[in-house]
Structure formats: C-alpha cells, structure tokens
Length: 151
View (cartoon, rainbow, N blue to C red):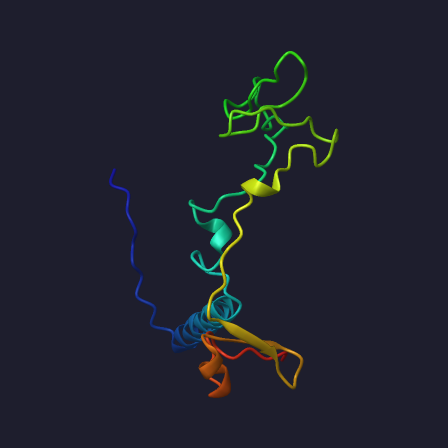
C-alpha cells in the first residue's frame, strides 16, 4: 500500500472563497506579528544576552531540579564538593551555596563594563524614549530603530 497525500479539487465557490479568506487573515496575523517583533526588537539577534560570547558574571547557579521522568541527575549538574559549597562554572573557583553568604562570590574587578558609544536617546513628547545613532542624528531626528510610539 502506498501512503501519500491525495489532492482533492474543490469546485464549490463558497468553500474556495471561505478558505481564501481564512488564509488571507492568517497571513495578516503573521505580518502583524513580524512587524511588532521587529519594532520591539525581539528577533534572534536583537538581545545581546542571546549571543554566545555574552559573559554572565557571576555565572548562574547550576540547576537543582531533575527533569520529569528522569531517574538520575542530568550530566550538566555538577556534584557538590564535600564542604557543601558549589563550584562556579568555568572559573574553577568555589562559589557560595545558593542562599548563603549572598554577595560573597562577587568581585567587581571581574565585571565587564561596556565602553561608551555614540548612540543618544531622549524622551519625546509622548513619553517614549527614542534612540538615535549620534548627536547629529538626534538633531536631524534620524532614529536608530523605527520610531516607536505608545499606541
């Protein structure tokens, strides 16, 4: 027996029209979604935290949950040293146990503070911050991204 898709020719104009309206409305919804994803900078490359080179300091704690249905801990969860403290991922230094000695593992010298850039921003008359590439661009109202509004 051969399995496959059987195409049926629909000759009823009522059904054809209804299907056409449904597909058109779905396309409008997708277009609106893409538009607002772009405007709100929610794309895959818009958030620098999603970049693999983004350094998170201090590193987040290892997960403490066990995946549903699992009988053993996942390999990404490190075992605790005998003294009960956690090991910081990547650095090889001992970290604090979650909820204890909060802030003791933080070293300000290890923070990567970004340097300044030329981008400028200001609050417009509608109460929305607008971002410009440079001071000159701000004077000429050349937005770095599509001008956002509150409506």
